[in-house]
Image 1 (cartoon, rainbow, N blue to C red):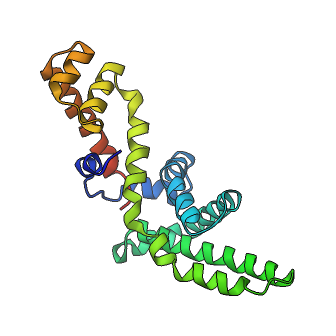
Image 2: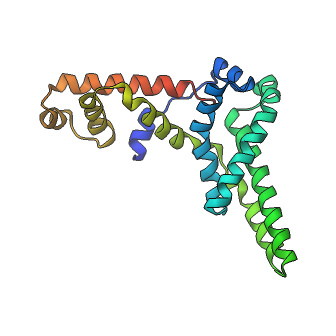
Length: 202
């Protein structure tokens, strides 16, 4: 997805009170939605911070264990910061823990530069674990989650006109529908995407 289409989709999301309450209660559906939406983001933060694929999955698990333990405190103090910033802080802490464990293990096995490498990676966490990078991952998640709500031709019209940036006339000709139908399909899907994005913790 290109920058243009990402900009067109994104609206400033607000925290869904019912969703947050469900996460606080560890309601399975609310928790599954949270992990489904933010798990890939945490995983990507781990990977770009220098953690290998197999270890990144373990760190993601550690992050959400910390979220489960701390969500009550965040709910009481959420006016002091955003959920994404809170999640990023937890992720940085769990990544630091991982690097410390690796550095200690390598030092015990005779490595001489483990601590230096660890410190360099830790110093870069503010740039690699950045809440501002979450939007595009959430957008992909939302788009994938709403696709099944629409007829295939409606979805194709939306995708061609909005993501592939085809002119409406070209989309209409390809799909055998009217230009007005292309615009209607685009509007319907975008409206649903915005609704779903508005449910995401900011």
